[in-house]
Image (cartoon, rainbow, N blue to C red; front, side):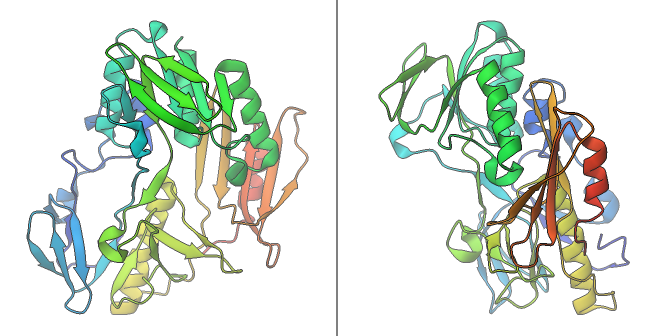
Length: 368
């Protein structure tokens, strides 16, 4: 966006992974399933944008001196900074221990490791998935469809209710019950691995033994370098970092504030893309002659593919949102809107089997 809007100065991008920057939403949707490789989900080369790429990650920031310290020991000064460090896989409980049979899923390398286990003989594989959020749910669906024996463990009795609404989340729960062995409303007490299997002990004493256990407990913002915490980086309504001059943040590291003071962040690929573009336009407004992009309001979407059903949503269901149901053409379809409790503005819409109605509602989402 900076180049498209006419910025011709020096651009430096820090990128710590060994792979070229890639579309992260395809990690579980394509790489894990063996449909695409890491090279095939790579983003367009930065070479055409005249970008200086540094293979390192940031360790700390000195905002007074406008200097970053990198993990390779280098100190890098900046005039303007955009923090787009995203999120990392939530660490599993240290009581779980370490094992080659206990894997996480966040990067293409994670997907390749799981694929290595599962791809050899999927129909004879048994898997215990710890977490039934977006990633855990999609992996459970894929592995069940491929013939694996799947145990799906979730702390909430009705997973995803906060982001999809109660009615759609209950339908998702029914789909899980019909296709995999569910352990909802349960916590993991311990994980132990032997030579040929891994055992997951639940809080009710039940032991789930399988070939592989996958931790899908969600993500935390990669923000320790800036805030000394994993709570994210607070931004204003135009994605300027609160309390830091000439610093902006975009993507799942950015923490926004709703009208009633609710902090929230958006951990979806399309939202990260939209926020990156919005932060760039704010930067050019603040420091050049660019137009004010106005307040950022999320209207991007995501799709959850489960057991040959597609659930699509746009926007963000803010904490405390009021849910409303809408009529649909099909009796099996569900269409839910989420309204800001402060002024009843629609901030999100989610649908199962209601694509046409959902697209019509998307136009009503408050936009920048």
